[in-house]
Image (tube, rainbow, N blue to C red; front, side, top):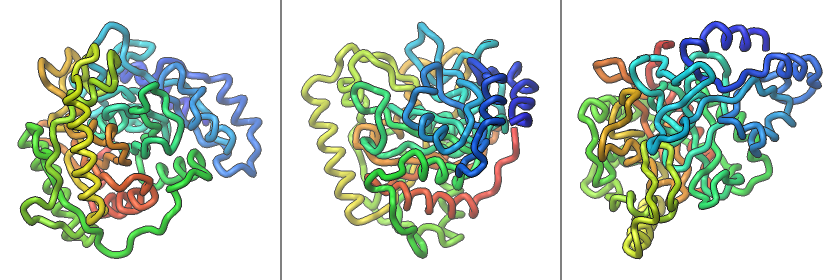
Length: 370
């Protein structure tokens, strides 16, 4: 705990990952924790000012983990959420201070990437865990819709976690989702059948981002982690889910550079969602894993993503469909921006997804520390 707090005090003035740091309370909890508890003394951070009241935080504390503070989320008055505002100012990407860390779990991703905590909670309504995980070079997991209590009235947002290593996300899942249906399951043996899509059939993916992710996929094939079906039509081609997401979310915000919808979309958006569900159900009935980039774009500057740029293009379809999805560090673009590989699995298949992610992590180069 002393090590975590010292690192926060030394680094956070430049990174602004935290809204609050609970020095006294964290040390008091650490001294008083029962050492027989499974997570006794593990420092962790919670997303935003209300994160300490989340289901995940309560379960972690019950297992002996100790919250050290609340992390930065988007400030007021913005319609895009791929940034954060900590106690000392805007949250910066630990790899490139001129770029955003992603969001809306911005501070959580930065705190983990910079080694201030080994684990931080998040929530993901359109990419809010996966996007900052991708842009800060850490692992991020979005759970199946309905597996854990949703912080969002629409149910689009699901609980998630950000960690440096996949195994730590497995620890989080074991205690936070203990007793939940669908979490248990045997890890897959041998190469896992998968298809790769750079764009899900509609996104305009940056060629530099696509090159990094494709190289990572090729490494997984060479290492025997996945068996790729490269035949035409192997990967699902989806309809653009933007209007369907906005219509369901109403006047909210999705956490990935998404303006409020004001009820946009109408009846046609429901048919888009139904058709995408049908295509994804057909795909996962025959193939257990789908691979894509996490975002079509690189981290943008602190002024915003620009008009009509949606960092959520490759993530929010899976909030609508409810599938679990993860972001795994894949490498860097030539200008030094981290890129994430997205892994998507069948609903309720978190255990298998984490097993594949851990095997993939071992096959990919370890990212340099920021």
